[in-house]
Amino acid sequence: MPTESETPATKLPAKARPVRRNEWTRGKMVTFLRELAATQSVSHAARAVGMSRASAYALRNRLKKTPFDLGWEVALEMGFGQLAQAVMDRALNGVEEQRFYHGELVGTVRRFDNRLAQWVLANPWRVGRNQMAREYTSDAFERLLERIESAGLAWEPEEPVPGREVDLFADRDAAEEAEARFARSESWYAAQAEEEMKRGSRG
Image (cartoon, rainbow, N blue to C red; front, side, top):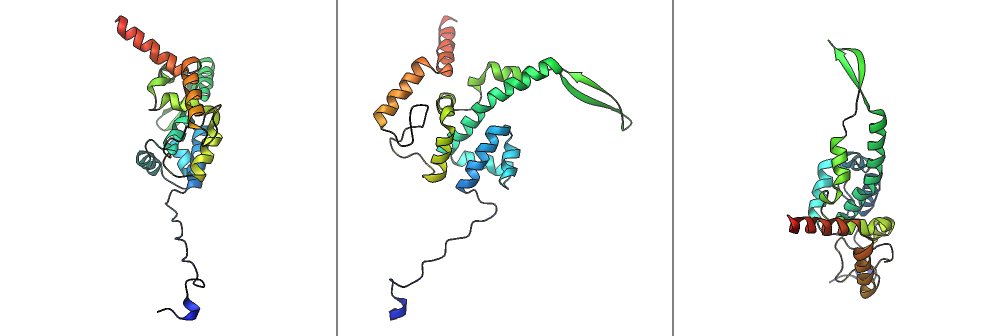
């Protein structure tokens, strides 16, 4: 039986468990996604928050179909513009490569091979796994990051995905109408999917 000085009203609350250095926190998730959007490098983004590349992929696999997973996809979508600029630069200027002989630098050459990057730009709907969702949310990246940092790891029942016209925890009916309108008239991925289906039916 507790003494008067140990009654529940006066007992000190238990100390929160200290965060381990190798633990993913909400803040680390948000910073990682910002860095990923800026650099398109999982390794760089992970190092920026003191984590490993392997742990970043493990986290994403553990959080499939969650706001973090979508945030990763949106960061990927934002990189296509950067990739297009890089491809243009390489097409015009090439990439300088050093040539060595017996360990000594003997000259440089310029290469103009952009086949992989050009394929990615021509086939972005084949990259990633939530193409339309990331396209829809790309204009609301900051709101999605706010959602990841301040709410549960998983989507709430009936919770809409934030988009250009849809704020966090918006009315579900209004959100569905906005998503449908986007898919019908604005989504490049939806148009490409429809074209692929048409070509498949003709073939």
